[in-house]
Length: 179
Image 1 (cartoon, rainbow, N blue to C red):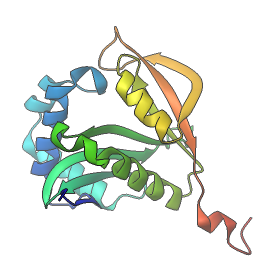
Image 2 (image 1 turned 90 degrees about the vertical axis):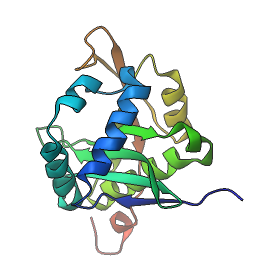
Image 3 (image 1 turned 180 degrees about the horizontal axis):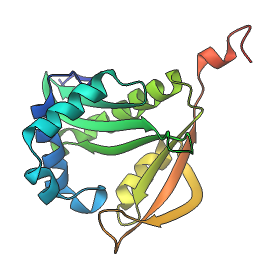
């Protein structure tokens, strides 16, 4: 029997879980994220507590956690860039290697995408490290395609990343009486 997977939005009191998952992701795939393991390890525990509390209730940013048999096994972030582009993003996806074959990444991205769609997004974007070919194939399988935008990664200036996009369907946008 395969383990059951669930996805829930982070709770305000889960700063320690956030720190555990973030540092695990950076240990395993340091090239894939916009921060370094050293930065995460040097951060005060209170900063993870503050982030968890904010992501638990914000209408513009959230973190979703994957659980297997009640144990944290992955995470993904979601946010709406309010600095001018109004683009919606999923980011920092990571699933523990022992449960990747169970499609937890798909569950996480879909939960984050649904939350963003509920907040009004019609497109979901993701910056993916060019070096991370597995992640590119994963996102393409979920319907993401290239936008043509590339940039140097903020935390790894020698590495490049590509912006992908997926169009989402929000049932509220099709409801009678909506524009």
